[in-house]
Length: 235
Image 1 (cartoon, one colour):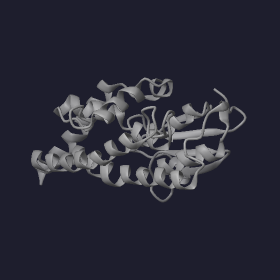
Image 2 (tube, helix red, strand yellow):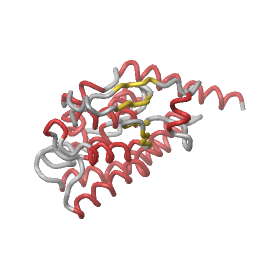
Image 3 (spheres, rainbow, N blue to C red):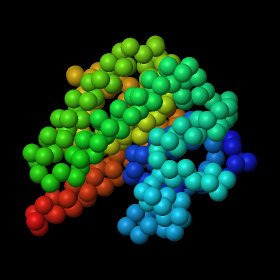
């Protein structure tokens, strides 16, 4: 991969979909980087000093300077390495199209991922179903965005863009959720364009290089759900 003349270090945790976003952006840009796996139960001095506010992953350290929050890191990578390995920009140059991409990126985090993440920490089946319903309802708007996008099947048109990368980070977790409960966040019957997008995205070389093993994610998700369920039983 290109970019060896820059010192890039990614502090992450293998299961995190937010870390996956950053890995995707780095691979799409053809950038070399060192990866540091973080134990979030015993946070390292590197993590605490690099991200003293939120104290969580991912953190990208570029030539000794840390950048935090996955959506900001992906934008930073795109701007700091605009022509890395001849790659195309993830964010559009046109101000309106750029603003639109940033809007939908924020929508994904606020309206889709917030309730969907609560599915794994829910302490009852009823609570889990409620959060899943909210996430699925929010996904409908993304189906409409794909329907109105340029030909090519990606949110970025005929090439992968910023929104694709941010949503692409959760693909393995979408498969894991379906394996655990049968719940489909991107249901082929309800959102066929998103279902097709997910399969198409998974075939990218960058995705194949960084995606987690689904079975391993399933085991990790079950562990998280069991811990929260045990906490519920104890209260």
